[in-house]
Length: 378
Image (tube, one colour):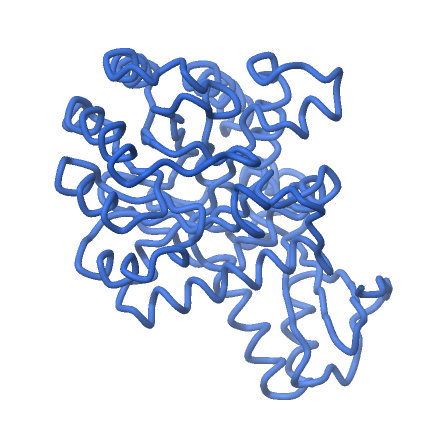
């Protein structure tokens, strides 16, 4: 277990073998930042293709070395100056992370990241944790997908496998029968369709049927054929973190430092995808709230969500109706967790998350519209 140790000033003589991370601080809409601290003092935070929405004025440096976690905060310019005096690998890592934090997130096909995007969850399953059975009938699933179109979903994520804790996995043929008719029926209606699957054969069939991308809870690690398959295709690929499998993930999950461990995993999966020929520009990262994590782990990740911008890819948050919301509140059933879902989503968006995955598309779109109006320049 890593021993937490807080340092008030930037440390000196950081080992070249230390693991370094940067978390943006003082994140604010650009117009508010100019009013409060003067124009030009902030750096853009993961701007979308349409321009900068948020800036950050300072960063927290996190250093894992020798079983300790060192934390120190400083203005970004001061951090750059500090890095000059450190070992070359340390300085290079700091520069790379600062560049990733401020690098534009270019459009990915029709997906433009100059505003938060809404991904609707469409589970064509009999046993998903929240809506299992609601849309197991193909006609009901298509009708719900059309409602998501009316609710202005940017993405509809269609899945035929329940990934709730302890869920049994369907056969490939069962998954195919559930997913493909819905993909065919919703293709061409406007939103980008993604298929939520761990199987390369389902990915291939769904892409052929009209899906535009893939969302894999195993970050393309479950099926050895998925990397090569997606290297031959275009479109978005969501890489999610999960500890274990849906069958085992909630059996006493453990981390050293949850946000950093998740970060390391996603960084390694990005590198694996690139090595397989999948362009980094196609990748989206998801820290996997609720997948092999306790309530405390989920809260740590949400508090440090801006850390994941250091991966240099668009960031997706999927906290909709998750059980931690009921645990923190009054043990409400999944369908009564909309307020908590919106709280998590708005928190993440205010820290720069580009995509929110939700069961409640219209309600989430409304909440984001109000937030955007409040933050709009005057």
